[in-house]
Structures are given as C-alpha cells and as structure tokens.
Length: 112
Length: 112
Image 1 (tube, helix red, strand yellow):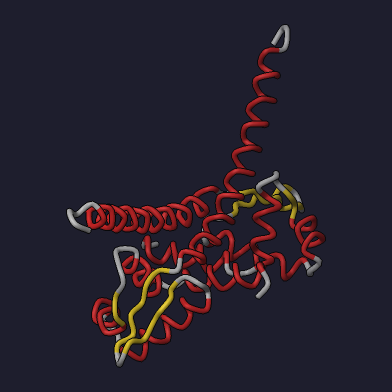
Image 2: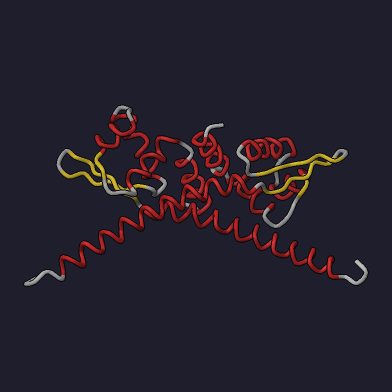
C-alpha cells in the first residue's frame, strides 16, 4: 500500500466516533468483539465492520482463539497519523518563528 | 458543534491526499485559491470544494480581498486531531509501562 493511501485510510478510520471509541478502549488493554459491541451499544455485526476498517488501516490487530476474537491496538496506524500531524505543526511553528524574527528586526530598526 | 462531531470532521478532512497537500502547502505560508489549484493540478472549482471541507473543520481560514481569496492555516483543527492522538499514545504507553513493571516483578520473584 502506498504511503499516501495508508494515510488516507488511517484518517478515514479515525473520522468515526465509534471507531475512535474502540481505540480509546483498546489503549487500556485487549478486548473481545462482544465486549467492544457492548461498550459501543451496537450489534456485533456493526462492530465487526468497524474493526475491519480499523485493521485495514493498521490501527487494530485481532486474533481468534477458538470462537473468541480478541482485539488489541496496533501502534503503526496511530504513529502514521501522529507523524503527519507533527510534521505540519513543526513546519507551522517554524514559520511563526521566522515571522517573529522578522517583526523583531523591524521593531529594532533605528528611528522606529 | 459538538466536540465529537468536530473531531469527526477534522479526521474526515485529513483523509484526502489533496486536502493534506493544501495543508502542507499552507504551513509554509498563505496562498491564493489559484496557487493552490495550480499546485494540486486540479480545477479551481475542485480546489474550492476541498477548501470548504478544510474550513468547516477549522483546518484552514480564508479571506477575500477584491477578487482574490487568500488561505492560511487555522491551527485549531490540527490541535484537535493531534490532541486526540496524543491522548491515545499516552494511554497506550502507560499500559505498556504497567505491563513492563509486572514482567519485572515476575522475573524478580525468588526462585524464578
């Protein structure tokens, strides 16, 4: 998967409050599909669909043992999204710093 | 707008490579709609649609002077998305720390 497409998928996955609630739950530890469905107050089928989106974007991993599927955080997707946002903030702050330096220089000009 | 809905919108806005390209461009300084359209290689109409999504999610602000609309970063949206991701990472790392502490305790048990 291309980096750009992977980033599209992560942000798309995060654009849903129920999917974010799954991640918030899993950061505190693994959970079964039934536990996640109960927490969200939606059907197991709807939960499985959300989990598919989260797995496709590397935000969640799951493993089936017997009849029970257990889910946990996959840190790769969160890292991808956070890295992109941090790059934007750094570029933005760098620009503000340069603007600040320009303003400082202007206020220090003789006669100003 | 509810916090949850605002977060939905920000992540939805970021789930498109062209819209992320607009933000990457604007972190380096303001740009007109025509400049952004030329950079993306899409029509002005398509660019205006992307900008509408970015403005609705507080990622971009714009101002029209005469016939020229100039766009700049609105840091509110980026902060919203980054804050959510940081909370997840912190919770996740906290869990890993606790797991590490449990493992340390187990390896220090007498006779182990």
